[in-house]
Length: 333
Image (cartoon, rainbow, N blue to C red; front, top):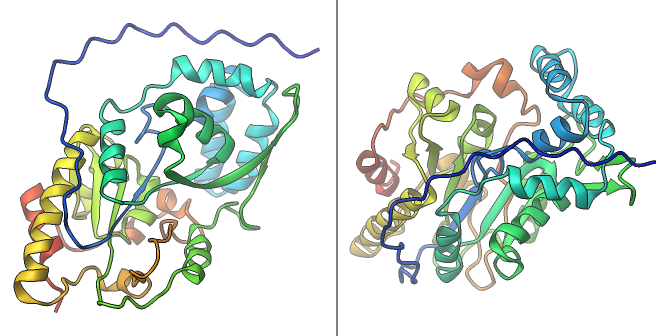
């Protein structure tokens, strides 16, 4: 007999947000292609979808914390820990989703930002180690299927028994991570036309909140780190360039500013602006076809971001959005 779904903990009433003028989501009219990559849990949504399921319908928070410690110590791999977590679930998908509907809170300005991306033909990609069916169902509910279909989700698939008695991740790759983001890059690179007809190089933006986002974040041109959380703390401590944000409205304002500065640099000098030279090796995309979707680059051993974070440091420091804008627009010698 399937267990009765556990009721979610009471959700505190949220205070009404102060009235504000909705951000303009119209087309900017700039020429350079922009590609957005974003973490899901803790970034688009304030809570973690997997944690919600495991704590309510699986092993519980104490065992989950013990497994996380085993992964961080190197005793077990991310894939091994995740397999045990998913195996602990015993709930029909729909019942689990009902809890997520009340337990999850979306960034209040994400929908407007995503509309801005659609109107400006900016591909928006979710990069996640989670389960694609779960993430898609959550997005469909919170932003609607018509808008959700514009978001590419690069994540693992899943096999879920109709009665919820068995959950199994279908890993994208046969690695310790299950989803090797570096391999995803190569897979998408094969689809892309590597040489643009006008030399324009897409601007890569990454949005995240935690240290686990760092392997992907360090390959982008512009990094947005949620204010007050671990990714920002790490960037401050190690001098990594980033732009802090509270909501996606802050990100939209900075993207418009950066795109306008880049447009002036590009057309005023008659030469394309140059960005991160490491990323330029793979980011030349043909403008003859639709912009392909990429998965953000990260090392084959993503958990090393937790164990040996000093490996992922860079010398430059950018502490405010004005400096970041100038640095992004400036050509690399």
